Image (cartoon, rainbow, N blue to C red; front, side, top):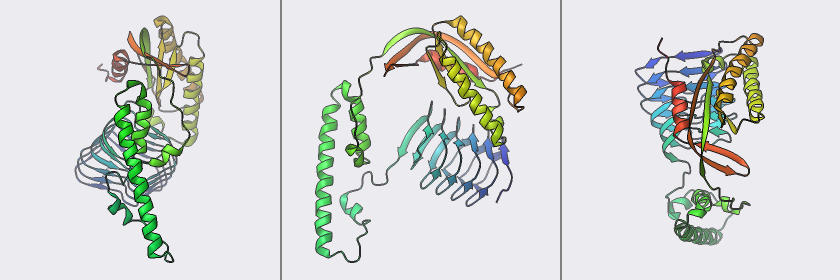
Length: 339
């Protein structure tokens, strides 16, 4: 049991890293670490927010049956092998921002953010690919159930499953020929792993028409954010409130086309480059005021400004943007400074 905060900063684990069944009463941080062999936190319990940021897992990482009572941040981490979350319970937000995952297995959580993540393969549902004979071996009947009742139930169940699979196969084949029905096709593909989704109310959303526009984008993120969020709950809450208030104030500006929260900063879009330059200065001033009221290890906002033609789409009256100009801007802001 770890009664106080634990930090592994830039640590290199040459052998196995096994923390199975460990209880972390304080905050935990693995930041900038390299784990060369198998790593496991099976059945571990994390009472405080956890940071697994900017790490590299050469082999598999196992979090089966672990319990996270607060949020966990896997941002900018490279998983070269499998990462397994079978039976893992998450009571807060899970961040995979700009995370690279070769094989993700059995992740189940209500609040997960995968902005900028790269996911090669994922296994979400256990029964995918099994035939009915394999499935029925795992059905538990009550002791008083007669053999005839069992057979009738299994016959009815097999008929319904086969009928549903046939309908899904033909429907997906037809829909794949029409570009405007991609949203419905995606839902059917999802339902093939969990058919109950087909019984939930849903309407086909209006098709959004993409277009291109000349825009400027400001990328601003907090330096040393991961170190600051490992502190006590009060400063962390104050920082989250500060960022939420800033995002609301920026979005209310007439010159702002869109502002996106990035966990530790913002992406701000506007046709007015000069306004974005002034906004970068305002971010620095507001942060200085915040640090006077809430002393912490925060550094400053790292800002990068770029302009170019972006892909734009409007859904339900809300604009969204992406394109090379956004990618270049984000990479520029995150580049290490050489002094």
